[in-house]
Amino acid sequence: MFENSAAQRSNIKNDVLSGLTVALALVPEAVAFALIAGVEPLVGLYAAFMVGLITAVMGGRPGMISGATGALAVVMVALVADHGVEYLFATVVLMGVIQVLAGVLRVARFIRLVPHPVMLGFVNGLAIVIFLAQLGQFGEAGQPGWAAGTFLEGSIVDVAWLAADQLTIMLSLVAITMAIIKFLPMLTTAIPSSLVAILVVSIAVFGLSVDTKVVGDVASIAGGLPTFSLPSVPFNVETLSIIFPYAFILAAIGLIESLLTLRLIDEITETRGNGNKECIGQGIANTATGMFGGMGGCAMIGQSMINVNSGGRGRLSGITAALSLLAFILFASPLIEQIPIAALIGVMFIVVIGTFEWSSFRIINRVPKQDAFVLITVSAVTVFTDLAVAVVVGVIISALVFAWNHAKEVRVEKRENRYGSHYYTVHGPLFFGSTASFSEQFTPRDDNKDVIIDFADSRVADHSGIEAIDALAMRYKKNNRILHLIHLSPECKKLLKKAGDMVEVNVVEDPNYFVAIENADWGDEPMVGGSN
Image (tube, rainbow, N blue to C red; front, side, top):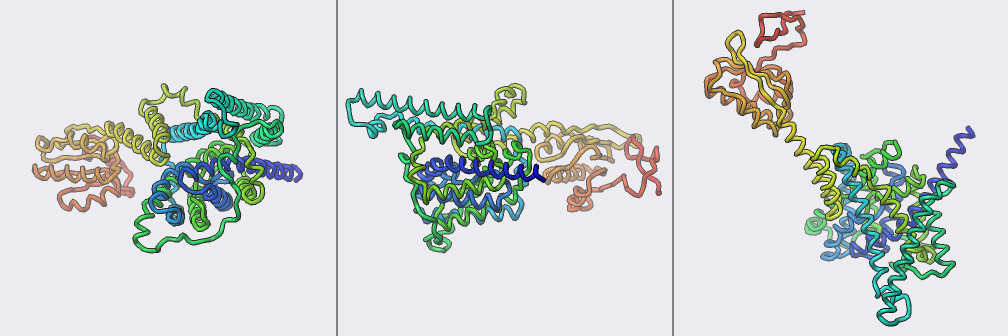
């Protein structure tokens, strides 16, 4: 009993502290993604709060963090630019409705169709995207204009020197942050090392008056509570025609990223989330967010990794992160705006190192070439376009490779049995990729009067296979041959009924008969016969 109570207290402590760490890392990310989408920073912060809170309570994966993401922000840019932010809010509401329907229809099960090379490419590509996003902060710090805005104006040489000095300071702070995160767990795990690193670096910068870029230099995060308001757009068909394409794309990207992140967290924690419940939770969150002035969101792999690595496993961690973010907006914005950007960059760099599958380099020459190609392609497409496109491309390539390899497996053996009938035995799956090879192996014009095709060692997998059999039957009919199809599956026989009398389906095996009678078969094998 006491052990259970101690474990519960430890879990609560871990969830609260990891949630606070995540909230600190959410601030610059939410602001940055809002600016990418062309909206005010508070629109991104409200989305991070509301989506994070609702999915933490209602989602299917405890410990997973959701909020505004770059994958969604890049899609929103054109909509905001062409129609304004109110149309974005309406789109986010519709996006949520689509995601709820996806959960009700249980589409989450299809995520299991994503092959492992695509999963590796997904995490590698996303790690690269997170890394590149942090480099933008260094670029701004290294520009003379940024340094000149911090110090008194001087000569070009002085400004350039100051810019280089600023870059050195940022790099040093990033290195200190990463060192604390790396080595503190060797001494104690009582407090998340990421949180300690942020606090230590922030106190050092403030106490020593180190001049470096802080959160407040990006944007102010001060604001009030989000207020309910229906999107101010005309509720007509024209509006629907504008927002529906964006809503569908956003819903698809959001669900793909969320379900793949869920699957990754499942593997790390060795537990199992509920994909369909997560779809519904994401949908409700986005619908609500659109009505409270938020830009919508989905699962965030970077923040989820911070949470899990900091010990956050339960729903309390996500709830704490969301409520802490709201507290920052309402009460603590002056303090949060003093956090050095370098400390948050250091945290994200550790996330990148932990997210990237370094084993990819070791196995790249050991796996089949097509799997290596898929892994690299998905990573590249994730970096240069977006996650949804990358996953779809990876799945399509994997499916085509699978189809091509299995198309070569179908083969047909031909012989003449003792009754003068030509007997064909089909081996391998019959589907859209193998129908051409299947049809080429029959010679209706040269075969004997009676022809038997045995499907005992084959499986008709799709409608293309049915059509191939139907077309083959027509070829034999035109050549005045009698065709017998044996050992077809019940599903296949039902579909073949449309062929009518031109196909004679003979089923040799019957569950009511089990005595094997030799010398009374279609081919040279004993047939099943005799009543029980």
